[in-house]
Image (tube, rainbow, N blue to C red; front, side, top):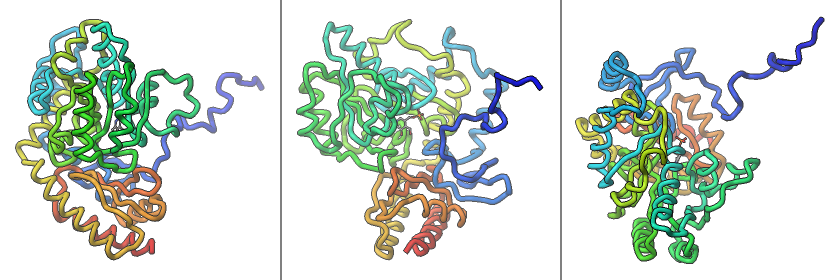
Length: 398
Ligand SMILES: Cc1ncc(COP(=O)(O)O)c(C=O)c1O
């Protein structure tokens, strides 16, 4: 028999590359905060596609807007003016206080655009400033630039040579940041609340201090709100709670409610450094993704979801604190809005598996933190239901 040299191991290999440690579950449909697997088991979704399904699943307004847009035009390229992109830019700029937006397809791309813009801004001034300072335990994405920006070594192993120009300092340590700033520094890039890194809050006083330091040194403050933005923390953007404003802001995840879209927004004098040919994306800001984002923003407003997030946040935090007083395994409850972490004295993975068998989907943030990310329109009854399941899970973990 003739030997095949082309596909010798195909029979053994999954055709999807092995980049994710997946839960043993296949989700096939969703409605509101509930999802169903391929055996028709129902789960309460406190993951929301990792802070993506802002309005839950199959929101009627989203279904209608997307099917109308799909029947009209999916894509036409940035060779042409795109009215929905302009509308979305107007809207996100008005709510963030930024002057202009660039649209892409993911959080990593939004941060890549931010890093490029910061460098180009100083290049245009004839300045040598190019370096970006970020925080340890941060997460900024999986592109070569953004994994180098990320303050966790585990994402970098095997990918060298990494691009130069990134420095890391501990979060909430203003003196360490001040010491790291030198004549090469172009920008500081921070998450107002580190999601992937363990639900670690950047204190308001720290963010105010960072803003001041950036102003004093004439460098840029860039905030990565890929996970915290679009109402997730109870205000449209988490930075509002510190009473500051960045020079560059990145968004993705919740912005499209499930349709891929990212955005990098900038203050006027900074945004002016991008001109035709300096940056771009084939799919960025196409009519379909912009329609999704416009619908997310419209529903957040129409359904007063920012107030709702604050109320549900209080309910969930209080419920978790009550569990903390009953179960020693919970060492701390922290977070903002509906980005909440329960730090554990034990590994989170077995508890996550147990929650799943009881019909609740939750995830981790690092090995010891349970992370809860329900959709912004989660109901009070659903929060109570989740807390009841978590009580059972904690009981089983004792
Ligand atoms: C704060 C933050 N920035 C960037 C990213 C990367 O986003 P994406 O996976 O869409 O590239 C993530 C993803 O978890 C994130 O949480």
